[in-house]
Length: 430
Image (cartoon, rainbow, N blue to C red; front, top):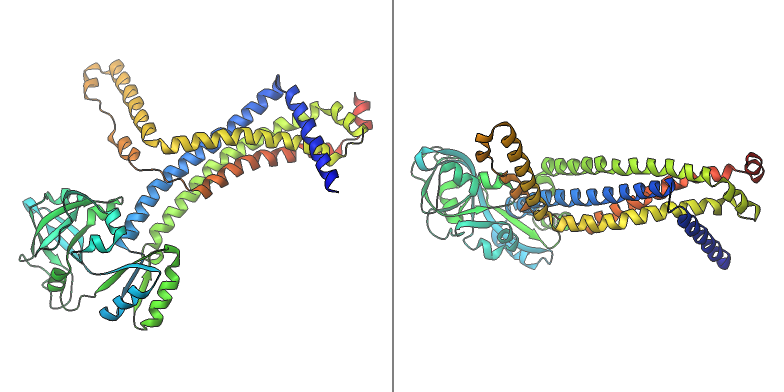
C-alpha cells in the first residue's frame, strides 16, 4: 500500500514537472507567472502591513500596560501583608504602591491643562523594570525624591510651557472632604520630562513622590498596588489567588482596564487583515481561470493518460501539484521581501518622504516657482519610521500558508472537470 502511494506520488510529480517544462512559453507561462507574482505581492504586502500595524499597536499596549494600567491593579488590602504575599508569589515580578488623583495643572504664563497625577515610590525605576523600559526621559531625570518634585509627560510639558526647573501648580485637585478642591499652595518643581509610545500618557500623566501624594490627596485617598507578572496571560490566576488571600480586595486585570481601547485595536487589525486578504481572493480567481484553460488545452494528454490506466483523481493531482508549485514560487519570495521590508521600514519611510517631497517640489516648480522654496519634507514619515515594526512568527506563518493554500484550492476546484471527462468524448471531439 505504501509503495503504491509513493509510486503514485512520483508519477504525479513527474508528469506535473513535464507539463511545467512544456508550459514555459506561451499563454500558460504568462498566466503562471502573473499568478505567482500576485501571490508574492500579496504575501509581501500583508506581512509588511501587519508588522507595521503590530508596531503601532504594541507600542501603545506596552506603554499602557507598563505605565498606566499595570498587569494587575489591586486595592483594599493590608499593605504589609500584601507586599509579603506578592514577594512569595512566583508569578509576580513586582508590586509597587501608588496613589492617583485628577488635577488641573497651571504652568508658565498661566497655561492650564488637566492631568492625572500619580504618586509613586522614589525608587520606582529600580523596582519596576517594565516601567523603566517604557518611560524614556528626554529632559532631566525621573527624580521625585525631593519634596514637591514632579515629572511630567512631554506633550503635557509643551502644553504648559514647562522645562526642567520650572514650577507648576496643582491648582484643582480631586479628593475627599479634607482636600482643598482649589488651592494655590500646591506648587511643584519639574525635575524631568518623559516620553512614551502612547500619546495620551505623554499628554495627561505626571508623577510625584508617594509621600506628597499622601499629604495632598487627603486621608480618603486609596492606595493602589500596580502588579507586574512574568506572563501577562496569567492575570486570571493571580487575581484568583489575591481574592482568595484577601477577601475584601478589589483586583482588576489589564484586560478590563482598557477593554474598549484594546477591543478597538483588535477590530482595526482584523478588518485590515480581511481587506488585504482580498488580494489572495483575486489571485485565486486568476489561478482558477488560468487552470481551467490549461485543463481544457490538455484534453488530449488527459485522454492519453486515462487510456494508459491513469485514474481521474491522480490526473487531477497533476494540476493540483502545478497550482501548489505556483503558490510556493510566489509565497517564498513574498515572505523574504515582506520580512526585508519590515526590518528596513525606517529606510522605506525615509525614501517615501524624499519621493513625496521631490514630487511636491516639482509640481510647485511647474505651477508656482516662487513657492517651491517653502516646500519641506513631511515630518510624519520620520515619526512613522521611528516606530519599530513587530514581526510575530505565527502571523507570518499563517499568511505564507494562506498564500500557498489559495493557489492550491483554486487549482483543485478548477481541475475538478478532469473527473467528468471520458476518453471516448475527448477522442471523438478531436
